[in-house]
Image (cartoon, rainbow, N blue to C red; front, side):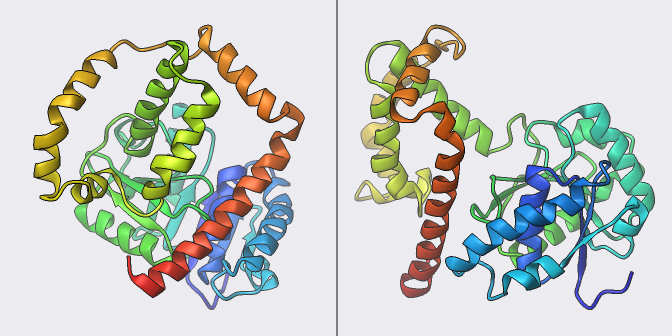
Length: 319
């Protein structure tokens, strides 16, 4: 299959695969699509068109037209055709270890030997997925924060056998397609994002379960409080800027306070216990279940506006 631009393959064209396809296509790559369901890759184009039109309205298509992005997507009936001549493979199949292992065995056998094989897995460890694979050195997890065409951070996680050269090439590739690689030195359950999100959710549930605050006020505290800073700086930079002498000064001033808080945060609240009823009631008071889909569209359009704003401010003020 001849192509005038670099080629990547997306293997599995569900929600995450389609999101990756948009991300790659708007950066000028040819994107081969393959899914075990022969109709899925072709159906993905309808989803891509709808999203791409919204992205174009916010000038988030990398200067390309919607039809150009769609023309970059090439559904393939055979996996071998999808992998022919690719430089990167993004696997987006079910989060089932046996399925991942079988898929990567096929990818390793069929893809060019210098192609990087990346999994979108959010929970499975590279050591488990790639164990015993002949090409384990070129296999990584590249876990997106969904959707990657709006949220650029991607966790790049090595397995025990992943080579340093592949990690370096992977980080460069992700940067070149407009993403922000979070390069991990070694694997851990939950990677970076789910561990941080899990810690925050644990405390959110604990506050509601203990009767300290409503779910609505916890949400507003993030959206109208911490997240305003976190939308452009992280927790370490936050504390570096919140004390006259930087991080060390902040720790000296507030470390003992946080140690005291930590003692009250050690007992985990069961999310599926009675507290979930209070959280569900709060959410349904604000948003009917039937409106979840419409609110997701609203969320993504807000993200588009924020991404466009951040890009402009980065250009004007620097990152």
